Image (cartoon, rainbow, N blue to C red; front, side, top):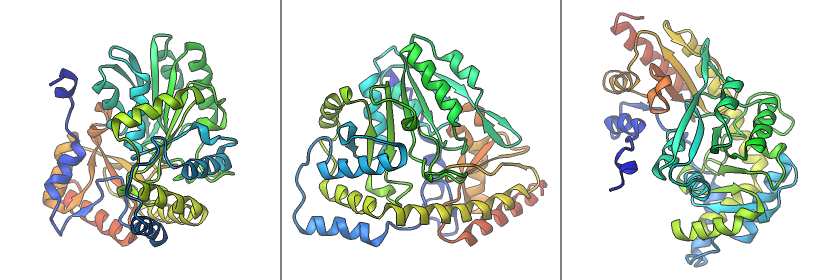
Length: 388
């Protein structure tokens, strides 16, 4: 087996979840998904596709009508995005891995902003790249970017910058000024940008378009920019494994070849579900975001009132990322919370070493009362430890 694969760390999130899966008394907030099912009309579109017998291969880059629908959706948010720049993928994870495969050789230098979902640093490492991390800095429970430190890290030898904003796990979001500075700098150094923007619609600040700032707002079609998206979060479709990439036109044909050698194509009935979701985007997504805002605004004040908790309300995403004073081993604390409190959270050190001592709580809950009960269990557990 390749050394790069042998050296991969197993998911610490899965390690915690595996300790609690199957236990009815555990309130699970460890994964990045809610507990609300995909809208019935979206499910029905897939069922009807299967009933029509659409169970064969499709075009590598996706159904033409879905690529057109994605382009129209992206254009409404960010200005003109042509369908010829779109590739449909078997999930956001596949989209990101395909982008890395297209851009990174063994030995290349990759810069990543962390803490971040661990796949984003693992994917270039699997290909033999050298990953340099530029950590966000916590300030009173909120994480902030040292822009100059990031720019200093990106040199002409940097092949790829990976940035996820709104960020999983911290909720940190790039400002327009930061995006402009990063794009201008990467143009000078010749560095590609891989922007994971799957949480762009889960944004709670004032915005004319109802989404977070995107590199697509400011980049030219020919810029060295690849943007990854997914239907998972904004359309309640995590299990469908449906995503897309926006890229320069010159990259599209090669991306089609890579898709052929990875997954061949995305299943047609899944793409039909995506078409149905996009047709109802302005009905489904605003409702999802409004509900997540209520969940955030239920959980965060309760968490902030717990003795020893350091946390700030995130501007984007679906997570509360908080520090628990006096408990520095995130993985062990998360395992103890499962075993002793029936509370399932993700350990901060799953996302980066600098997030040791932090915990991630996914607040996407159909019943906000579950969030309240989770905080009650956390408080009770802290009292039992003599910390309440």
